[in-house]
Image (cartoon, rainbow, N blue to C red; front, side, top):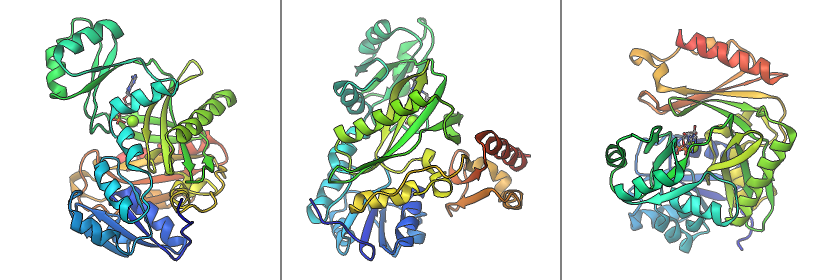
Length: 379
Ligand SMILES: Nc1ncnc2c1ncn2[C@@H]1O[C@H](COP(=O)(O)OP(=O)(O)O)[C@@H](O)[C@H]1O
Ligand SMILES: [Mg+2]
């Protein structure tokens, strides 16, 4: 077990996206120095880091240079090769571990882990050919959804199968060859996520579930607190804590869940800060980003208490119509709205450029304001 890394020390972050950027901002606020590593030289986390290394994930020499001077390393991106993380970990403690990463970045391993631990998740069958897919569809029934085992995000790498007469050869082709997971479709009422943090010595902290509303498979709004009963909230938090312990998480993890008739079905694990936790920056005692830093550095974990109900609205590149930056004065004139932009440069449809958090005394009021802001920005 490594000694706590106190403020003043240097944290390395693998990955240079907005999750790394906001983690770096939280770390710097506490007095840490931050080094980032990403294959892109214009990574938006690099802009707020003390130094940045641009290199491929398998560039050992560059990894060694990056690790030099880091006293703790973490990550903000799921699809880093686990071998990169184990290599770094030989030089300096890296959390989460290569083992955690390997489970969470592959749907097959993720689902098999959940099932083995007795965590409720959708029925699934692993398939690696068109014939296996046909047999699996018969077994699982329709509707169901085929997902690639590797590299899925924001609904990419997924095909829903709604009818028994669907042409499964086409479906299999869309997934490409390789391994897929066929999952029963869950007729859920709500999607929620729970953020949980855990330190190397087993201390944990858990946030209230957020309710997630997607548009075109991308998170649109995240409502905090989720509109669920107290019993469902407790069950969701208990499951997230169980998963963090069973997987031996060190760091922070988001657990995505479906709520169906008050029951929880776990969908996905992300061992890093998560889009549905962005509102914690403005609406909770400790943000998920600060908690991430505290967990990987072995500090006492911060309070997770929600200070005010909030709604987080994602700002996608679609809002930059004809290359025009949206009129932020529409947002800034709302005193309860906090604008976060990630300095990502070129906007593209579906690209996450920033977010807004709106707080209010009630969730309904925050939702109304967030919807009004979205309408004003899209007008
Ligand atoms: N088994 C399922 N039943 C119902 N809806 C699903 C199922 N799997 C995925 N979805 C829907 O698709 C979305 C994206 O799927 P998910 O597994 O979270 O992949 P990713 O977020 O990596 O793209 C989910 O948020 C949910 O809305
Ligand atoms: Mg998901």
